[in-house]
Image 1 (tube, one colour):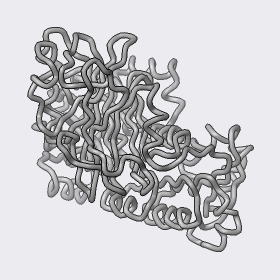
Image 2 (cartoon, one colour; image 1 turned 45 degrees about the vertical axis):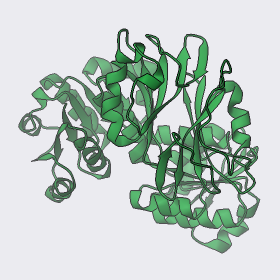
Image 3 (cartoon, one colour; image 1 turned 30 degrees about the vertical axis):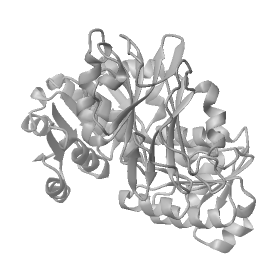
Length: 446
């Protein structure tokens, strides 16, 4: 696939690195030669120096021949203009990153479609929604719904009290007995292990389980942690993510939002009438204690600095806060953040990658989720008629060894996959896979 990326900043460079390793031809446009040089040194891409909102730069990048145009400039208006022009010049599909929720309202989205933009994505909104979802499942580190919640991926770290410790990962169905959940993988010491052997659970493993809706509560109990109702929450950082979380939840719980910028704090106080806004530096331990950090049920750090978010979250965890979530945009810091006990890490680059990657696949991918802290991804496919997946049982498909089918939704019925199961046309299939096999999986369902 020929892909053109407008914007060589953090988001654009991450996408270029990710997509260039999947047999795609990547061209990246930016007016900053240094950013282009950095990307070219890290990924196999063609660089075009210029303004992506101009016809000259777009033509130089051969947009008329591209299959996918992705606009991820820092300025929202530039993305809208670039994506619109690219589509008019011949790009088969054109998508743009935005920072304005108003654009996503149904009537407004139609206007952008008529302008030629196929898809708009707002990473901060998706990140905020992930946080809100996790606050309802405090014993998990990640929680992802598929097929409108009929199947869920539940992710948690094993506490010493977990009943799973010492048991085998792989749980096979007995004859005539349907499974309600299944472990698909674990992450241990930075390595992801697919559940295909006699590997046993160990303390501090991060466990990935696919479960039917009726089994989610049972699965969560395996973590050794109890679900906690969130009544008091502190948000560090008046970013778009922080504001959206507060806006959505301020009717349901007591929220304190901390921001060090006085002008921003005053503006936030006008916007969020039921959230207590505090103008303070979250790195000051005494100030945080004065604001009763130790009495909070949840702490969410979403400032623009990964270092600040990690340090503040580490302190919140030591103070006994039950659920701690941190935004860590520096990918090199994610393992560090998890190793010091932060419950959940969110990263806008990975969120954006999840939104965009499905556009690069020929198969009908309904959803794809990059899992923070793991090398793996989880995808939801629709099985097409007469595809290879319909012609043999799952165990006879010879899927790549680092790929596992977790669950299947067939009409109103939900199944946890087993080796003897046969897939039918139009089944929705949730697949857990390592990155190197993603491009191979589509063959089975296409």
